[in-house]
Structures are given as structure tokens and as C-alpha cells.
View 1: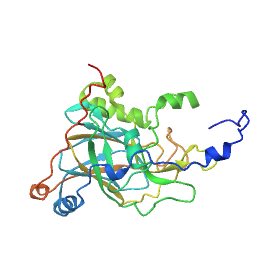
View 2 (view 1 turned 90 degrees about the vertical axis):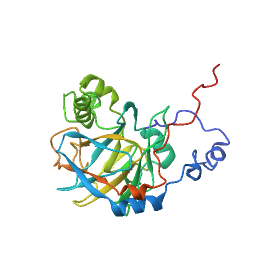
View 3 (view 1 turned 45 degrees about the vertical axis):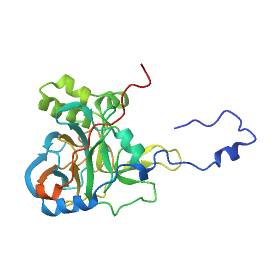
View 4 (view 1 turned 180 degrees about the horizontal axis):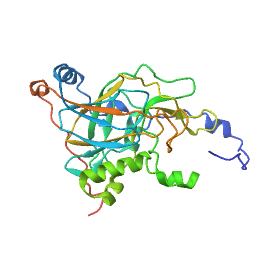
Length: 286
């Protein structure tokens, strides 16, 4: 939040501010999503696994490339913090900042989850979203953001001077650390998240990040197609539906469910997992 200005506005201030904005990255030049193939694959898929994420905890799950996974609300309004890693190389993981730059502050059907530089390729594509009806509300809020970093015990300690261990960062650290057998390394591989089902935005006056009660209800889900072999990590946020607070045991919290689906391989004919980014990596050096 910026302070009240101390510098006098120049004579042409309004002229400078009136310059029209330009979208930095045109979505028209991104690799196209094969919606027809995805529709065929979705019509044939069968559930092969289910992972339950308890309230205020996180779990990891595996999704082979060419498979689908759904994050499902089952018992009550609950938001989740999602991390994704390349199953064979944890250094390649979800890049929320670039996903935000390419698709916007909130994502839905047809948007992709992009991986970190130098790999920078689609990790997953969103194929269905039962909350796509929400759009934007009068406060500038929407659902499924790639703005927020994740609640964490370090920021919580600065703000409240306590040691709360069920922030999403800690939950993901425990889950992924257990998965790779190294809790210390696991923390450094946990990364900025997609806030699944969370309703957020920036206040219209001070432009501060806000949260409000999620519109998610039991039966709602968001579905993804795995473009590469994935390990996912999902935390059932201690904020519950994020209507009041997070980083505490006060909010009502509920489990989240991850369902894994396998499509008929014949429906994927012509599809291939995307290669890592084609940039030569020399950065202009000899």
C-alpha cells in the first residue's frame, strides 16, 4: 500500500496516467489447447485412485502424464493450496508468477499451469471448473487465484509472535518432505501455490490482497489434465473457506479429495507430452 504522495504532481500528470495499458503477453500466441482431444479423453476416463487430504494437513499424490485429476469439495466449504512437481525432477515445479503473467490473476478452464525456468512448459491444463460461473464480483474478487503465496509460519510469527505449525507452507513441507524422504530439502522445494477454491482479489481503493468466503460447496471440483508426470501436493488450508482468518485453529475446516482418472489411451492419439522450453540457454554468452 502506497503512502499519501509527498511529491507534487507534474503539469502533465493526468496525460501520463491516461496512457492506455497494453497486455504484456498475448494469449493468442500461446501453444493452443487441443480441446477436442481433451473432450474425447474426458468422456472415456475412469477413476483409478483417490487421496483424502485431512483438514489442516497436506498430502502428496501421483498423476501420470496423460491422466486427469480432480480436486473435490466433499464435506463443507474448504480452500486448498496446490503445488506441482515434475515427478522425475523436483527442480521443475509450478511457476505461479509466470502462470499469472500468461493467464491472469485467477485461472479456470483452458488455462495452464506452467513450470519454472529454464523448463517453462505446461505441467497441467485445467479441463473443467464447476465454479466458472462465479466470474468477477463487485469487489473485484474471483476464484482460484495465482496471486497468494501460501500461508506460512514465518509471516505468521512476524504478525502474531507465535509458532503455528499447520500453515499451508508447513503442511506442504511435511507432505513433500515425507514423499522425498528429506524434510529439510522438501521445504526449499515447496513453492508459491494455486489457491484452489479461494475467493480473492485486490481492494479497489488500497489495492491490497483480500480474501472472502469461498463460494465452493460439496460436490464442486476443479479438474486438470497432466501434461507431464506429476507429483502434486495439496494442503487443506487452516483458514477453511477463508471467510475470517487463516494460520490458526479457529476456522471450521473440512477435508479435500483428489481423484485420479485414466482415459482410454486411444483418445490421446496424436497427443504428446510437451518438451522442455526450446530456448538455447546461452543468455548471449560465448
